[in-house]
Image 1: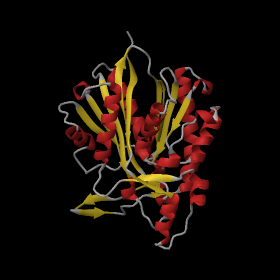
Image 2: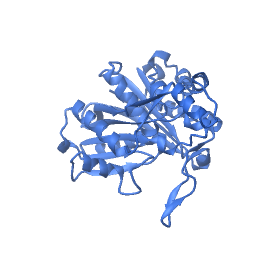
Image 3: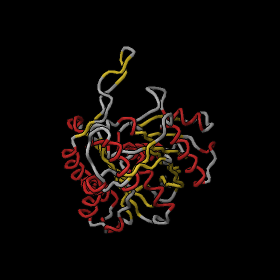
Image 4: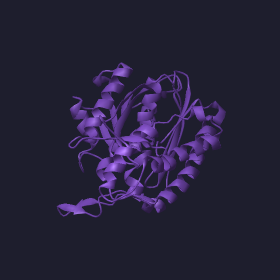
Length: 325
Protein backbone atom coordinates (compact mmCIF):
# COMPACT_ATOMS: atom_id res chain seq x y z
CA UNK A 1 0.00 0.00 0.00
CA UNK A 2 1.34 3.43 -0.95
CA UNK A 3 1.80 5.95 1.83
CA UNK A 4 0.88 9.58 1.20
CA UNK A 5 0.80 12.83 3.17
CA UNK A 6 -2.36 14.90 3.57
CA UNK A 7 -3.17 18.22 5.21
CA UNK A 8 -5.71 17.59 7.96
CA UNK A 9 -5.79 20.99 9.67
CA UNK A 10 -4.72 24.61 9.23
CA UNK A 11 -4.31 27.55 11.58
CA UNK A 12 -2.96 31.08 11.73
CA UNK A 13 -2.18 34.01 13.97
CA UNK A 14 -1.90 37.70 13.09
CA UNK A 15 -0.82 40.42 15.51
CA UNK A 16 -3.62 42.71 16.58
CA UNK A 17 -1.95 45.88 15.31
CA UNK A 18 -2.97 46.61 11.71
CA UNK A 19 -0.82 49.28 10.06
CA UNK A 20 -2.38 50.80 6.95
CA UNK A 21 -0.34 52.41 4.20
CA UNK A 22 -1.64 55.82 5.26
CA UNK A 23 -0.56 55.24 8.87
CA UNK A 24 2.87 54.03 7.76
CA UNK A 25 3.24 57.00 5.39
CA UNK A 26 2.51 59.39 8.24
CA UNK A 27 5.12 57.68 10.42
CA UNK A 28 7.72 57.82 7.65
CA UNK A 29 6.96 61.49 7.03
CA UNK A 30 8.29 62.25 10.51
CA UNK A 31 11.61 60.86 9.26
CA UNK A 32 11.53 62.99 6.15
CA UNK A 33 10.60 60.07 3.88
CA UNK A 34 7.80 60.51 1.38
CA UNK A 35 5.46 57.71 0.36
CA UNK A 36 1.73 57.19 -0.05
CA UNK A 37 -0.97 54.56 -0.20
CA UNK A 38 -1.17 55.05 -3.97
CA UNK A 39 2.59 54.57 -4.42
CA UNK A 40 2.68 51.37 -2.34
CA UNK A 41 -0.46 49.80 -3.84
CA UNK A 42 0.59 50.52 -7.42
CA UNK A 43 3.95 48.79 -6.98
CA UNK A 44 3.07 45.95 -4.62
CA UNK A 45 -0.67 45.53 -4.09
CA UNK A 46 -0.12 45.97 -0.34
CA UNK A 47 -2.64 48.09 1.57
CA UNK A 48 -1.82 47.09 5.17
CA UNK A 49 0.30 44.78 7.28
CA UNK A 50 0.40 43.58 10.90
CA UNK A 51 3.20 44.48 13.30
CA UNK A 52 3.81 42.54 16.51
CA UNK A 53 4.00 44.48 19.74
CA UNK A 54 7.35 44.83 21.51
CA UNK A 55 8.30 41.60 23.27
CA UNK A 56 6.19 39.35 21.03
CA UNK A 57 8.39 36.66 19.47
CA UNK A 58 8.03 34.33 16.51
CA UNK A 59 7.35 31.50 18.94
CA UNK A 60 4.43 33.41 20.51
CA UNK A 61 2.73 33.80 17.14
CA UNK A 62 3.67 30.25 16.17
CA UNK A 63 2.10 28.73 19.28
CA UNK A 64 -1.27 30.31 18.54
CA UNK A 65 -1.20 29.24 14.88
CA UNK A 66 -0.15 25.73 15.88
CA UNK A 67 -2.95 25.35 18.42
CA UNK A 68 -5.50 26.52 15.87
CA UNK A 69 -4.22 23.94 13.38
CA UNK A 70 -4.32 21.16 15.99
CA UNK A 71 -7.89 22.09 16.89
CA UNK A 72 -8.93 22.13 13.23
CA UNK A 73 -7.35 18.72 12.70
CA UNK A 74 -8.94 17.29 15.83
CA UNK A 75 -5.50 16.22 17.01
CA UNK A 76 -4.08 15.97 20.50
CA UNK A 77 -0.59 17.24 21.16
CA UNK A 78 0.46 13.67 21.86
CA UNK A 79 -0.46 12.75 18.28
CA UNK A 80 2.37 14.89 16.89
CA UNK A 81 5.71 13.18 16.35
CA UNK A 82 7.42 15.91 14.29
CA UNK A 83 7.57 19.73 14.52
CA UNK A 84 9.22 21.86 11.83
CA UNK A 85 9.28 25.65 12.09
CA UNK A 86 10.16 27.75 9.05
CA UNK A 87 11.51 31.12 10.16
CA UNK A 88 14.15 33.72 9.40
CA UNK A 89 13.42 35.56 12.64
CA UNK A 90 14.06 32.92 15.32
CA UNK A 91 13.67 33.75 18.99
CA UNK A 92 17.39 33.22 19.58
CA UNK A 93 20.52 31.79 17.96
CA UNK A 94 19.78 28.45 19.59
CA UNK A 95 17.94 26.36 20.61
CA UNK A 96 15.58 26.24 17.66
CA UNK A 97 12.29 28.10 17.70
CA UNK A 98 10.68 24.70 17.10
CA UNK A 99 11.83 23.50 20.52
CA UNK A 100 10.66 26.76 22.12
CA UNK A 101 7.21 26.27 20.60
CA UNK A 102 7.28 22.64 21.67
CA UNK A 103 7.84 23.74 25.26
CA UNK A 104 5.18 26.46 25.13
CA UNK A 105 2.66 23.94 23.78
CA UNK A 106 3.48 21.56 26.63
CA UNK A 107 4.79 18.87 24.28
CA UNK A 108 7.72 16.55 24.90
CA UNK A 109 9.79 13.98 23.07
CA UNK A 110 8.88 14.46 19.42
CA UNK A 111 11.48 15.60 16.88
CA UNK A 112 11.64 19.39 16.47
CA UNK A 113 13.84 21.62 14.34
CA UNK A 114 13.89 24.85 12.32
CA UNK A 115 14.01 25.27 8.55
CA UNK A 116 15.77 28.34 7.14
CA UNK A 117 15.01 29.08 3.50
CA UNK A 118 13.58 32.56 4.07
CA UNK A 119 10.34 33.11 2.10
CA UNK A 120 10.56 29.59 0.63
CA UNK A 121 10.92 28.12 4.10
CA UNK A 122 7.41 26.72 4.42
CA UNK A 123 7.67 24.95 1.05
CA UNK A 124 11.00 23.45 2.10
CA UNK A 125 9.49 22.36 5.43
CA UNK A 126 6.52 20.73 3.72
CA UNK A 127 8.75 18.77 1.33
CA UNK A 128 10.95 17.57 4.20
CA UNK A 129 7.96 16.57 6.34
CA UNK A 130 6.37 14.75 3.40
CA UNK A 131 9.54 12.74 2.86
CA UNK A 132 9.82 11.89 6.56
CA UNK A 133 6.19 10.75 6.74
CA UNK A 134 6.37 8.75 3.52
CA UNK A 135 9.49 7.01 4.83
CA UNK A 136 7.23 5.41 7.44
CA UNK A 137 9.18 6.84 10.37
CA UNK A 138 6.63 9.53 11.26
CA UNK A 139 2.85 9.72 11.22
CA UNK A 140 1.76 13.24 12.11
CA UNK A 141 3.69 16.48 11.65
CA UNK A 142 3.08 20.05 12.77
CA UNK A 143 4.50 22.61 10.33
CA UNK A 144 4.68 26.27 11.31
CA UNK A 145 5.81 29.38 9.45
CA UNK A 146 6.37 32.20 11.93
CA UNK A 147 7.97 35.61 11.42
CA UNK A 148 8.45 39.01 13.06
CA UNK A 149 10.06 40.65 10.03
CA UNK A 150 9.25 44.11 11.36
CA UNK A 151 12.30 43.68 13.61
CA UNK A 152 14.57 43.57 10.53
CA UNK A 153 13.22 46.67 8.80
CA UNK A 154 15.08 49.95 8.34
CA UNK A 155 12.32 52.56 8.49
CA UNK A 156 14.62 54.99 6.69
CA UNK A 157 14.50 52.74 3.61
CA UNK A 158 11.22 53.32 1.79
CA UNK A 159 11.93 50.55 -0.72
CA UNK A 160 11.80 47.78 1.91
CA UNK A 161 10.02 48.98 5.06
CA UNK A 162 6.63 49.17 3.33
CA UNK A 163 6.75 45.55 2.16
CA UNK A 164 6.90 43.30 5.20
CA UNK A 165 4.71 42.27 8.11
CA UNK A 166 4.48 39.78 10.97
CA UNK A 167 2.40 36.65 11.47
CA UNK A 168 2.31 32.87 11.68
CA UNK A 169 0.54 30.05 9.91
CA UNK A 170 0.49 26.31 10.55
CA UNK A 171 -0.69 23.01 9.11
CA UNK A 172 -0.98 19.48 10.44
CA UNK A 173 0.18 16.80 8.01
CA UNK A 174 -0.79 13.16 8.48
CA UNK A 175 0.09 9.87 6.83
CA UNK A 176 -2.72 8.61 4.60
CA UNK A 177 -3.46 5.89 2.07
CA UNK A 178 -5.16 8.54 -0.09
CA UNK A 179 -3.09 10.91 -2.25
CA UNK A 180 -2.46 14.34 -0.75
CA UNK A 181 0.88 15.85 -1.70
CA UNK A 182 1.27 14.87 -5.34
CA UNK A 183 4.61 16.36 -6.33
CA UNK A 184 7.23 18.84 -5.14
CA UNK A 185 10.17 20.78 -6.51
CA UNK A 186 12.97 22.60 -4.64
CA UNK A 187 15.88 24.73 -5.82
CA UNK A 188 18.48 27.24 -4.62
CA UNK A 189 21.20 29.34 -6.25
CA UNK A 190 23.63 31.01 -3.88
CA UNK A 191 25.08 33.25 -6.57
CA UNK A 192 22.06 35.49 -6.01
CA UNK A 193 22.51 35.78 -2.23
CA UNK A 194 23.32 39.49 -2.40
CA UNK A 195 19.99 40.59 -3.90
CA UNK A 196 18.07 39.88 -0.67
CA UNK A 197 19.81 39.49 2.68
CA UNK A 198 20.31 40.49 6.29
CA UNK A 199 23.98 40.06 7.09
CA UNK A 200 24.14 40.55 10.86
CA UNK A 201 25.39 37.78 13.15
CA UNK A 202 26.63 37.39 16.69
CA UNK A 203 30.38 37.34 17.17
CA UNK A 204 32.72 37.97 20.09
CA UNK A 205 29.84 38.88 22.31
CA UNK A 206 28.44 41.58 20.03
CA UNK A 207 26.30 42.10 16.94
CA UNK A 208 28.47 41.98 13.83
CA UNK A 209 27.33 43.53 10.55
CA UNK A 210 24.22 45.43 9.46
CA UNK A 211 21.08 44.10 11.20
CA UNK A 212 18.64 45.46 8.60
CA UNK A 213 17.09 43.77 5.57
CA UNK A 214 18.51 44.76 2.18
CA UNK A 215 16.94 44.03 -1.19
CA UNK A 216 17.58 44.76 -4.85
CA UNK A 217 13.90 44.98 -5.77
CA UNK A 218 14.28 44.90 -9.55
CA UNK A 219 16.59 41.88 -9.46
CA UNK A 220 14.29 40.00 -7.08
CA UNK A 221 11.23 40.77 -9.21
CA UNK A 222 12.87 39.60 -12.43
CA UNK A 223 14.22 36.37 -10.94
CA UNK A 224 11.04 35.58 -9.00
CA UNK A 225 8.79 35.75 -12.04
CA UNK A 226 11.09 33.38 -13.91
CA UNK A 227 11.66 30.75 -11.23
CA UNK A 228 8.06 30.65 -9.98
CA UNK A 229 6.86 29.78 -13.46
CA UNK A 230 9.54 27.11 -13.89
CA UNK A 231 8.97 25.42 -10.53
CA UNK A 232 5.20 25.40 -11.08
CA UNK A 233 5.66 23.74 -14.46
CA UNK A 234 8.01 21.21 -12.90
CA UNK A 235 5.49 20.02 -10.26
CA UNK A 236 2.71 19.87 -12.83
CA UNK A 237 4.87 17.67 -15.05
CA UNK A 238 5.87 15.41 -12.15
CA UNK A 239 2.22 14.98 -11.15
CA UNK A 240 0.97 14.52 -14.70
CA UNK A 241 -1.29 17.56 -14.38
CA UNK A 242 -1.84 20.80 -16.27
CA UNK A 243 -2.40 24.38 -15.18
CA UNK A 244 -6.10 23.97 -15.95
CA UNK A 245 -6.25 21.23 -13.30
CA UNK A 246 -5.28 23.66 -10.53
CA UNK A 247 -8.28 24.86 -8.53
CA UNK A 248 -6.30 27.31 -6.40
CA UNK A 249 -2.86 28.90 -6.69
CA UNK A 250 -1.38 30.11 -3.40
CA UNK A 251 2.03 31.63 -4.04
CA UNK A 252 4.28 33.37 -1.57
CA UNK A 253 2.53 36.66 -0.85
CA UNK A 254 5.21 39.21 -1.70
CA UNK A 255 4.06 41.27 -4.65
CA UNK A 256 0.70 41.18 -6.41
CA UNK A 257 2.22 41.80 -9.84
CA UNK A 258 4.54 38.78 -9.48
CA UNK A 259 1.63 36.61 -8.37
CA UNK A 260 -0.63 37.72 -11.20
CA UNK A 261 2.12 37.19 -13.76
CA UNK A 262 2.69 33.65 -12.52
CA UNK A 263 -1.02 32.78 -12.68
CA UNK A 264 -1.35 34.21 -16.19
CA UNK A 265 1.66 32.31 -17.53
CA UNK A 266 0.28 29.07 -16.07
CA UNK A 267 -3.17 29.63 -17.56
CA UNK A 268 -4.78 29.87 -14.11
CA UNK A 269 -7.81 32.16 -13.96
CA UNK A 270 -7.35 35.36 -11.91
CA UNK A 271 -10.19 34.37 -9.58
CA UNK A 272 -8.27 31.16 -8.72
CA UNK A 273 -5.29 33.13 -7.41
CA UNK A 274 -5.74 33.48 -3.64
CA UNK A 275 -4.45 36.82 -2.39
CA UNK A 276 -3.70 38.02 1.14
CA UNK A 277 -0.72 40.27 0.41
CA UNK A 278 -3.07 43.25 0.34
CA UNK A 279 -3.79 42.88 4.08
CA UNK A 280 -0.78 40.92 5.35
CA UNK A 281 2.14 42.33 3.36
CA UNK A 282 5.09 39.99 2.91
CA UNK A 283 5.30 37.74 5.98
CA UNK A 284 8.13 35.61 4.57
CA UNK A 285 7.84 31.95 5.63
CA UNK A 286 4.46 32.64 7.24
CA UNK A 287 2.80 33.95 4.08
CA UNK A 288 1.81 30.66 2.43
CA UNK A 289 0.31 28.96 5.53
CA UNK A 290 -1.43 32.22 6.47
CA UNK A 291 -3.03 32.40 3.03
CA UNK A 292 -3.85 28.68 3.03
CA UNK A 293 -5.65 28.96 6.35
CA UNK A 294 -7.57 32.01 5.18
CA UNK A 295 -8.65 30.16 2.02
CA UNK A 296 -9.74 27.08 3.95
CA UNK A 297 -11.59 28.92 6.70
CA UNK A 298 -13.14 31.27 4.15
CA UNK A 299 -14.71 28.33 2.35
CA UNK A 300 -12.67 28.81 -0.83
CA UNK A 301 -10.57 25.64 -0.67
CA UNK A 302 -12.65 22.50 -0.18
CA UNK A 303 -11.82 18.82 0.16
CA UNK A 304 -10.82 17.41 -3.20
CA UNK A 305 -9.52 20.70 -4.61
CA UNK A 306 -6.12 20.67 -6.31
CA UNK A 307 -3.90 23.37 -4.82
CA UNK A 308 -0.50 24.67 -5.87
CA UNK A 309 1.72 26.27 -3.25
CA UNK A 310 4.92 28.00 -4.34
CA UNK A 311 7.54 30.21 -2.75
CA UNK A 312 10.63 32.20 -3.59
CA UNK A 313 13.01 33.89 -1.20
CA UNK A 314 16.47 35.00 -0.21
CA UNK A 315 19.30 32.63 -0.77
CA UNK A 316 18.11 32.56 -3.54
CA UNK A 317 15.63 29.73 -2.87
CA UNK A 318 12.44 28.62 -4.58
CA UNK A 319 10.09 25.67 -4.85
CA UNK A 320 6.54 24.42 -5.23
CA UNK A 321 4.17 21.74 -3.95
CA UNK A 322 1.12 20.40 -5.77
CA UNK A 323 -1.48 18.71 -3.58
CA UNK A 324 -5.02 17.44 -3.46
CA UNK A 325 -6.65 18.99 -0.44
